[in-house]
Image (cartoon, rainbow, N blue to C red; front, side, top):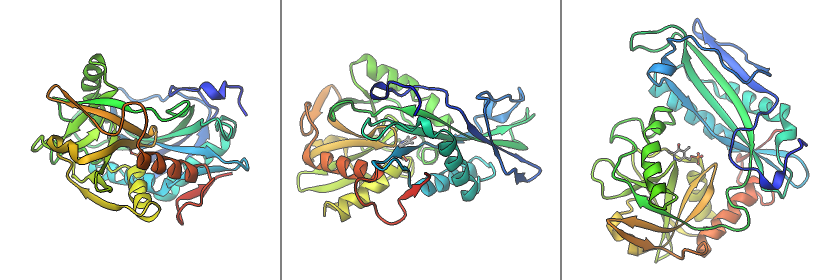
Amino acid sequence: MANLDWNNVGFEYIQTDFRFVAHYKDGAWSAGELVKDNHVVLHEASPALHYGQQCFEGLKAYRCKDNSINLFRPEENAKRLQKSCQRLLMPPVPVDLFLKACTQVVQSNEKWVGPYGSGATLYVRPLVLGVGKGLGLQPAQEYLFIVFCAPVGPYFKGGMCPANFVVSEFDRAAPSGTGAVKVGGNYAGSLLPAKLAKEQGFSDCVYLDPATRTKIEEVGAANFFAISKKGVFVTPASPSILPSITRMSLVHLAKEHLGLEVVEGDVFINALEEYSEAGVCGTAAVIVPVGGISYQGKLHVFYSQEQAGPITKKLYETLVGMQFGDLQAPQGWITKVS
Ligand SMILES: *Cc1c(COP(=O)(O)O)cnc(C)c1O
């Protein structure tokens, strides 16, 4: 195991030993290989740099009690990356190539997967870039598929802590835009709304649906769910939300493991009193309980600002238990890489 203070790892770039690089040229992807150099040299006219012809993914590798290593639902990331590529006229990375790249990156950097019990994991970041000379606005002729990784700490050190969020005046995505795909262009525009939210003392901002601005869509770069007072798991449905794999997993767990009714529908911002708990979810954060949401100057508190609600907590424990191999996950969710 690498010599890191494993109980105090944050979410920052720490250089590991190997990354995987494949090149698309003349209509085909190369087999790809592991390399040591963590720099990418690009043509100055690469469409990724000018026009945002770029997309990415994020997943984690987890160290189990028996020292083996899990990837969590990597085929779902592979499929989502293909959708992102298709939306930007980039050649989709074959699922097999994606899985091979992630597996090799984790195996070759095995010492960077934190010890079981520390909460640290290895964050895996695949990306696809449109490269080569292309001054006019058109798709690149060549592409790079890169997978690198970095050890990251748990989002919570010592217990889940609710966070407060504020509704943004900005939209994250357009009604028929690129919100549903994980393309870099969606994120630069979210830096300012996030900064403004933080300056007001919130953890991040809530984005409403861009068409009517009446319903919750996303929170920062994470999906949203709420538990109604009747015990229904509700999560927004919209064509401009990025379909989170964590959320997809929670929908299944809420139904099959907690026996809750699940509704993928509307969460109106002016009807938050219908909900007794709320949370935001994604690979990096897993689940962050929502303490309160501020809208038009009023803070609506869900369960509590001090602790997570019981259903949110149960969902968190079930999901994390499966990711680290302590609980039996549904068929196909876990890929052992070591
Ligand atoms: C990546 C991402 C998520 C979380 O997706 P996961 O698959 O759960 O990691 C949610 N919202 C946005 C905007 C994202 O980019």
